[in-house]
Structures are given as structure tokens and as C-alpha cells.
Image (cartoon, rainbow, N blue to C red):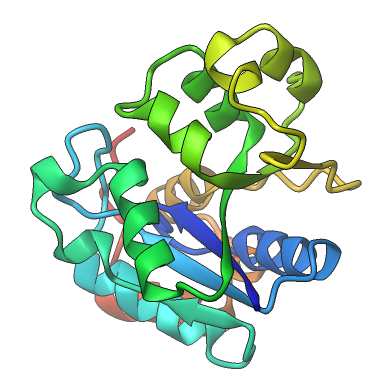
Length: 208
């Protein structure tokens, strides 16, 4: 039996922090694979700045040298009304029936799930396992203890809480803003992705 982490994000663009986070989680949690799962432009709750095609190509370039990392376009291929994390996890558990499958997320998403902001959130927590990364200002244990959705579905193995030990919060938003303002975020993302963005003139007219 292997251990697989599902790492969902907009990856708009993918950054060195995404890669470092995936590597840290894989190492500390003994994951065999980390699946990079980019969000779809069709989602109603996210507003992407870049077409799926560009984000997908940059992910492939960014992870090509690490055999632990896989890209999967499952959510990109779904109709908008079918894109829910619960259904996504059902898909991957069926795809890897002999493996343990974990959903990787930041503590900010744990707060949202606990507050009932996610569709099918109760079933999601009841039927899955999570690797949760610390975020500044969020007490993960308190978040779990104060939410009926989280604490009533926690059997002691539901949440693997990780304090990364180093605050690296450079975001895709920051990188987009730097490109838009004529900045130089060259070393905040893989050089292949930086060159791709320059070649295709991405993020030059970024709007928050």
C-alpha cells in the first residue's frame, strides 16, 4: 500500500513555494507521490487569471525533474457543477484503491471547512484523511475543537497537522503583481516557468 497526497491549487502560476511545500509534505508524511491538481477555470468560486492551458504547461515544466510529483488535470476536465473536493477525492480513491489518499491543504482551508463553507464538507471530512499545513495566526487544534464538522468526524487519524518550520508565504498573487508592475520575480518560481511567462506575455495586465 502506498501513500498519495492530492495537492490542489490554482497554481497561477506555480511557485517555488508550491514545490518546496510538496517536497516537505512528502518527506515528513512519507508520501510516495504528490499529485498536483490545478483548479479549473470553470469553477464558480475561483477567478483564474490565466487559461488552463498555460497553467497546465507550467506545472508540467516545474515538476518534470522530481519523480515523486505527478500532474493530473481531472478538475480541469470536469463540468463546473461537478467540481467539488468531495467528488474529486472519490475519484482518486477509486483510481488508487490500494493506496492511502490524503488531501493536502493549508490551515486557512481547514477554517473554511469547519465553518461549513464547503459543499459536502461534512461528508468530505467524515470519509477522508487530510494533511494540514500551518498558516500564521491560525491555531489548528483550536479550529478543530471548535467546529462540530471537524471534531465530530475526527477519529485521531483524520488530520495530520504540519508546522512547516519556516514561513515561506510568497504567493502566486505576489508574483502576478510583480510581473504586472514590471518587477523581477525571477527566483520565486522555476526558471522554465519564468521564461514561459515572459515568452507568452502572461500577467502583464493583472487585475486583483
